[in-house]
Image (cartoon, rainbow, N blue to C red; front, side, top):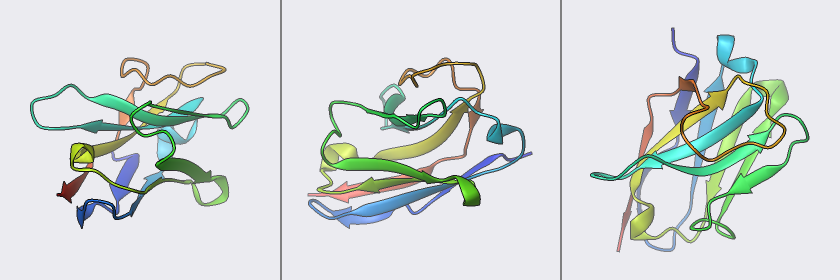
Length: 126
């Protein structure tokens, strides 16, 4: 049963923008944190951004601060990642994930997240 479905990836040129979407359903809805991760070929999966359910606060990786914005529409059970000023090093498969364990502030490490989407490819050409 699929609980998280990402969309919006594609091929863009350096400096351009993309907006990723993640539809959340089923058991994944009961989260305390929701996050975007990415994984480039040959690299570890890394946290990009997250939102804490407790207070709605966001957290970003240093590499994307000022360029990426994460948001959500709770009524639609959707989360988004607005990516601006894209760079070739942003090329990766982007995943949406939820953390069902209590936490006041969301974390950008992989281990607490137990529901994952299938990912969407983002490719940035130079």
